[in-house]
Image (cartoon, rainbow, N blue to C red; front, side, top):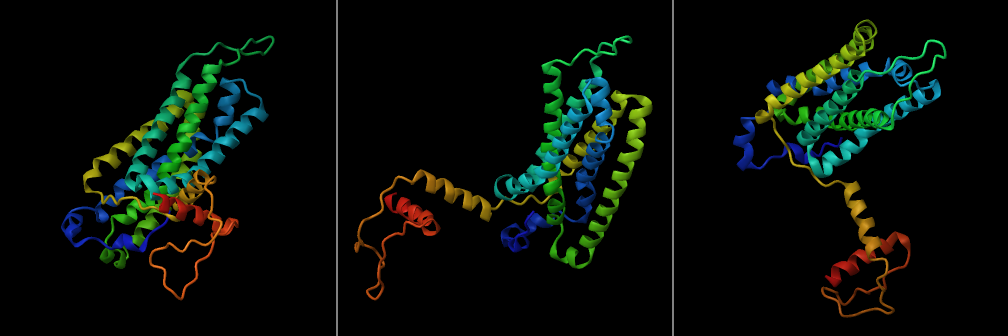
Length: 296
């Protein structure tokens, strides 16, 4: 996430509105990140056993699926941060991410409810899952990865937005980060021990149902304090501007550059010399953009 220095500069007309919102009192409600980590991390340790026992997958394929799921989960916060800063905003990104993650966990829970035919004791062969069953499984993994990207990329930044400059100077921000790190470590420990124990002793349905309950509580707490949050608007960053340059350059790739210097220019001082737009890539992109602006 990027923090712009102008985030702390507010319009005087909005100061009265901001005073009634935000503050350290809203920070406990923005711990959706810790509950999301507990839920997602608690699903990973025993997932290979679930894929082998319930879906009959071999070790290699099960490991590949978990590797892709873990990689997508760790990569999506980068995409989420880009979308948050450029288009969506921090509050909406956390909202979309938490709901998407919850839907993915519910979908994964539904895979445990459908009864499966038992394996043949003599041949030790099991019925292969259908394409639809695999589609539901992969969709649940994808939704949880997308949700993690939305929550983890913006939850801390949203919490920082709630604090005023005076509260930051009083050390509330430092205490918040201390508690956040402590909660993250504690939830990871609980997810790797307690939730794994539930899955082993009480079965997959209960074991996958606990993360769903945690996410429901997290989403309910988060949206219950929605009227009190400071919700800043997204700002266009360098990456989105660079992408727009590339798109404009591709659209204008067939435009013809002038063959000679054109002296019919506005605001051209006498002592200055005009130059023909270059064909080099370094300057050609911006030349095409200028031509497009002039043509409009």
